[in-house]
Amino acid sequence: MKIEEDEKKMNFFSEQCERFESVHKYKFCYLRKYLDLLNS
Image 1 (spheres, helix red, strand yellow):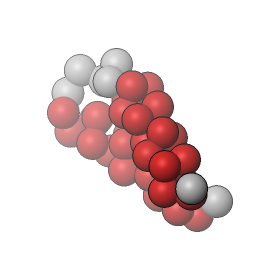
Image 2 (cartoon, helix red, strand yellow; image 1 turned 90 degrees about the vertical axis):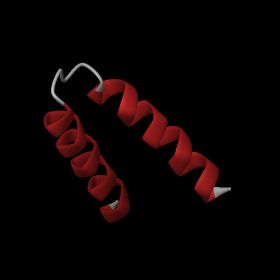
Image 3 (tube, one colour; image 1 turned 45 degrees about the vertical axis):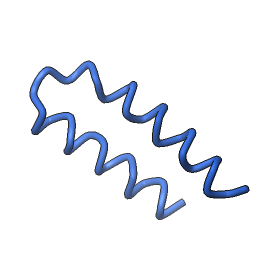
């Protein structure tokens, strides 16, 4: 299932992004990775 795969990826991204202290940076990081995922 593609959706499940993407969900796993997004969970991974959120873990990767968590090292950004500020929420703003975190959201930006997460969004950028999400857009990369959509474009791939």
